[in-house]
Image 1 (cartoon, rainbow, N blue to C red):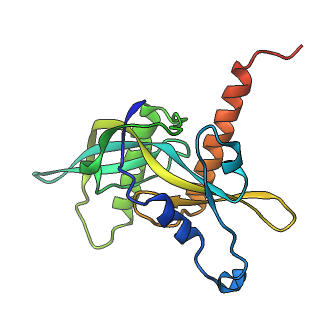
Image 2 (image 1 turned 180 degrees about the vertical axis):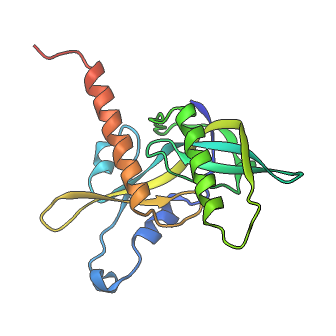
Length: 202
């Protein structure tokens, strides 16, 4: 499948090293376990703890604004599952890639992404102090659907409950609560779709 996406800049080994950072809670490495990398068609590679790379949907939205006679174009990104927005400074790095891994569809429509980008930028403008004439949002000029790479670690907590951690495979930054929720939403939506399309058992 060929999709527009941010390039993955963090390898599987680098992701494992980041997930396995030595901390007090793992006795500085004494309680660390070997992390596998999931391989297609190899069930043994998916025994926790293991990692896999997923591609989560997002929108790049170009918002046109002006202040007096000056025009500006601001790129924002809107999460394709949760719908939150933030500024985007790497739109020039988006590229078409052939993916063999799971790329999840968005739950947010392009129209909803436009509204979220407008709202997010407006809230940012209103929070700025000391500026009498604030920029005016004029229109949305472009909306691009793309996918961002995320490394996901599946592991067992105490009590053998399965849990996940996420890592941004583009920037290498640890995934916060929003990214973790996005991963869970993508996995649950995919499961619902799969169950709905499977033939009923007699």
